[in-house]
Length: 354
Ligand code: NAI
Ligand code: MG
Image (cartoon, protein in one colour):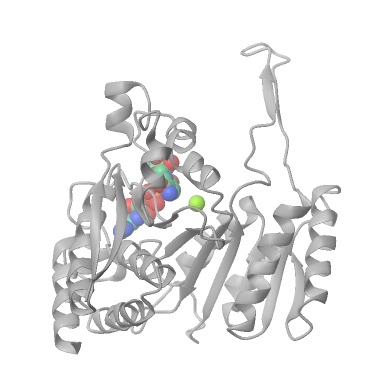
């Protein structure tokens, strides 16, 4: 019998990404061996150090190289020395766009025994479905009269029918497998062209899903409601900017942005999808060994699920709950362990449950 193999491109990137990616790889390799498949890793040393050497965040054929992979596992990108728009637009955003990874899937839930910042301790479990290729994060615009009193900057948001429709369709499909409820983030009162368009297209898609209940919220009110009562939400569909902000908020509600995973997914499977924790390179803690690897490991579970290894993915998420419940965690979750010790705890847990 030939073993199932998957070619995985690893991009540790910068900062704590170089700590969490090797850690997650260790856990994923133990898991894959136990489930009869193999991850064939190719590591790409791209990021800000590469930029310092070559003037670019990745080689000019970087996208082609990644195109060979079945999936990409990314750490984080960015250092204080390189402006964030340079690092982001030199690596992360080209990958998301070139491979048309139009879904940014960001599940968040309460973890056993972890006290979030909320007074209300009822557990919540939700997914932010963020549009990942258009919207407010665009290149249309410009700057004039730099440094002069009448300096100006213009940045256009671009929403297309195809773009809104496909993200909405994904969110409604996902809601069908969960609670059957979708909350849509809008701001049609203030942003008078793109957001009413978003609302219209989302409502049109909703008509194809009569079994799913759609509620629209202005994003400011939605942010407040999430803090007051996250349990009332399940699937939240949002534009690129709104989804970015809401998913950091929901991750913080769970207790730490170090735990939240993200899939940048092309559901058509034409190109590789990319999996990464939602946190950044955390320059304030890099090198201390205290980076929480859970967001990276959970992203690995999303990757396995995407590759069709659902059993292994579920096992990894169950291990995650047990590791957290046992208190074998890093300082961001109130523990005292290091990145590598948390990984050891995962591996032990996987061996125990195997
Ligand atoms: P950040 O997520 O790196 O850090 C925010 C805070 O959360 C820091 O106090 C950090 O120590 C803490 N934190 C983050 N991840 C953690 C983990 N795994 N364990 C424990 N604590 C953790 O966001 P920040 O400071 O805004 O950005 C730092 C750099 O990262 C910037 O260059 C930024 O552009 C980049 N960035 C990259 C992202 C990516 O690669 N997808 C996403 C967000 C930021
Ligand atoms: Mg973000």
